[in-house]
Length: 378
Ligand SMILES: [Zn+2]
Picture 1 (cartoon, protein in one colour):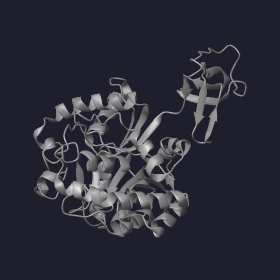
Picture 2 (tube, helix red, strand yellow; picture 1 turned 120 degrees about the vertical axis):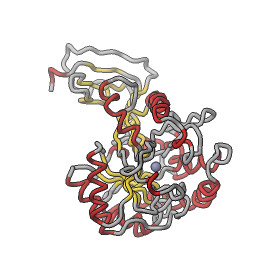
Picture 3 (cartoon, protein in one colour; picture 1 turned 90 degrees about the vertical axis):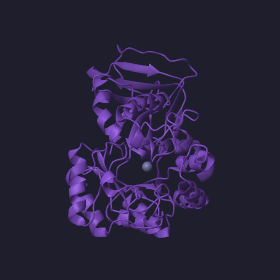
């Protein structure tokens, strides 16, 4: 390893969330050829060749790993009206706004985002890799996989506007509607064909969908297993939107180990999450934002009412999961950014919510935003 090491960065404090340690007089050895961190610790404890460059940061400077938002959507939307705005805004305008939003997320210390559904991140990934835009590293689902009358099916639009394989409309939220194991298999393959880094599937209804409810399970086990199998065959993981207790258990039993929202997670769900070594991404930030600002931002009344209804239960259930030892990861579920709030860049709200509402220590919350946000059991 010795020759490739190019820099030994000296700092004041070094935070290592994975070991839950805070180190004074820290030092990080960076292999710039490979773009990786080779060693980190107190200045005397790290190994580096003697002739290496040693830039020294001010003694009050802290180094910590880049943060990860493990559930976000880059859409370019500027209002809470996520139904109408994508239909009447030119797609290129949404992309231009998204580039600014990605910069804001990067400047907030987030070096990786997991886009849990939406075409823009998927399509900007190449620009990010080429260095054409300033952006966190993008891990994107692209097309989402939903049953008909599922959370990804925008119920009040004609079905031909909604299924991304049949519509001519290009919108940032693009669901593939599928029913029965063979259609599900095909939808998963379609998402992979479009370049998905992972498959995003909805196993329950939700807060932001009109006609269903968070408690409704969506997809049968056969359908879920077909989707998971296709993902695993391509060495990809699956990330589930799962709010109701039954849909959470179904997702875990089908082999999905990244569970977002988990509003009604019960004892069975908690035990299964532990057994499968799954990561739960509660996304408290979006529910709070909808409650606090939904009305002024033009969000649909039914979404605001459902958010108000679930928050307390959500917090209580996630506290139980945390106390039982389930891995929690930070995901904000930010999916729009009105000019008066500028939500992209406020991603660390989720770290604060995990500390204040769930009871994590600050170091545990940083672990949720780094080690756990990156953890894939599959
Ligand atoms: Zn989401």
